[in-house]
Image (tube, rainbow over all chains, first blue to last red; front, side, top):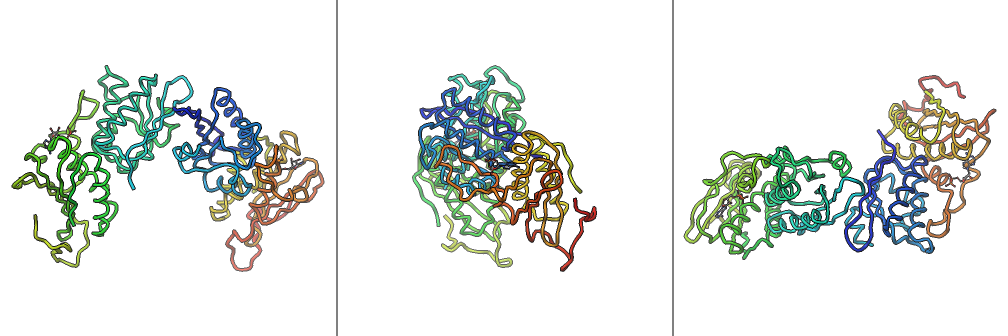
Amino acid sequence: MSEKLQIGISREEGEKAVSIMRLKGSVDANTQGTLEAKAKEAIDAGSQRLILDMSGVDYLGSAGMRAIHAISRMLSPDEQGMRSPYIKVVSPSPAAAKVFKTLGFDSFIDIHDSIDDALAAF
Amino acid sequence: MSEKLQIGISREEGEKAVSIMRLKGSVDANTQGTLEAKAKEAIDAGSQRLILDMSGVDYLGSAGMRAIHAISRMLSPDEQGMRSPYIKVVSPSPAAAKVFKTLGFDSFIDIHDSIDDALAAF
Amino acid sequence: MTLKIRADLGQLNRIREYVTERATELGIPSAVFDDLRLAVDEAVTNVLVHGYGGAGDLEIELRGHGPDLHIFLRDRAPPFDPVGNAPRDLVPPGDRESPGGFGIFLMQSAMDEILHRETRDGNELTLVKRGVLSTPASSHTPSSSGNHGN
Amino acid sequence: MTLKIRADLGQLNRIREYVTERATELGIPSAVFDDLRLAVDEAVTNVLVHGYGGAGDLEIELRGHGPDLHIFLRDRAPPFDPVGNAPRDLVPPGDRESPGGFGIFLMQSAMDEILHRETRDGNELTLVKRGVLSTPASSHTPSSSGNHGN
Ligand SMILES: Nc1ncnc2c1ncn2[C@@H]1O[C@H](COP(=O)(O)OP(=O)(O)O)[C@@H](O)[C@H]1O
Ligand SMILES: Nc1ncnc2c1ncn2[C@@H]1O[C@H](COP(=O)(O)OP(=O)(O)O)[C@@H](O)[C@H]1O
């Protein structure tokens, strides 16, 4: 059924230094660290923008939101704004989208229906 | 409604030298050249394997199949086998999947439901 | 209701959309649209590429004929009968260097019948899809614009 | 039907699956499963992380109570009442360096009521979701394993 978290990363060709992280499985307190570590790797390797493809995520709880918050801080350590411009989320399940909304993350991070839409929004 | 073809390319991190091409729009005689040219660019830049993400393709006809055939030949110019090992197709629409099947391409090229499944199959 | 168009390959999108729109107007089940768009796209592509060598005048008409749909494609290109030139057997794409004949094969597989006739100045192809129109019992329905042929 | 488990965070998947399985057995509409899994995951995570500092014994029981679902979570960790310690207002994540209180907030938003009581050796949390069981009119349904409490 549900699985632990696996993450594939690809680097978009072009000027924008975007990496696409494909999340597959569950984002919970057990896998939060995996997500943060993989994001850090990508950022250390030069990515300035991240797209989290959540179409394969079967569970997202508060631990996932803490991870996303931490990643947004890695990408813009100084900013203290209302919106994180360097991270986009793609295709969360209805349940995951509800978690975003309940915690007010929908006004902090853009959610898109496709990778192309997310890329265009950077 | 339907659009001409746009192609985003990302390079998967890891040893396998895989590029993922996200096709959006129509693959017909008018856009066949775009597809072949973009694939050639990726191959020239070092990609030895290609994943064609067709989830955004709203039309695929024989011209698209000629393009896919040409690309498979670029990836393995010498081989004359039954199956092209270096190219995978992901998430074609039912209509596009029918074109693959009608022309016998389903026994020539693997079709997968997700990018991760396609990657695992290389 | 006939689309008359000076077409090149850049118009293929628009032509497929026209097919969808007319099929919708005629009340054809949407499950059939993919087949119709495929057959018309393949036929038109061949006329443009092989017949005209690029661009030329086309007429496209979708018309009910009892329960059947007839799609007429008219051009002024040199005479060519795709049915008579259909590929014999389809060879798997892995088997040869440069497979071909895909277009006519797909066109045939998407339709129930394809008729070719030479016209005064070119070709008329009739693509037939049977049983896709719901008609008042056993009537021969003329299209709204009348049924005075070509 | 109670799950007794020596749990650490690696068991969260299994615990969420148990919730789904039991909710299915009880005939609860699947539209509610996400809320149940979320509330249990958040509650269990807090007990493991903050209560046990890693791992410890847990009991999880889903039981119908008339039309309502009661989920009991029992632990042997130091007493803590999440409801009494719920965050006041949720501050948008952009506003501060290190936002928190997400877990308890989500747990509350997913359930209709959350009750805490101290037990002899730890805590019992009751997560209540109302009106999700269809019951024979006005009956108080004991669970199949009987209703002898803790
Ligand atoms: N309208 C046409 N006029 C002239 N020749 C045509 C026409 N349509 C098709 N042909 C010929 O028939 C061949 C097969 O067509 P088709 O099945 O579409 O395959 P492909 O274009 O993939 O070779 C073409 O290569 C061409 O030589
Ligand atoms: N079972 C528990 N035992 C002790 N402290 C707890 C327990 N559950 C929650 N807490 C405390 O309540 C705080 C808020 O919890 P929560 O809403 O899950 O937010 P977060 O874990 O994101 O800070 C925790 O940081 C912790 O200090």
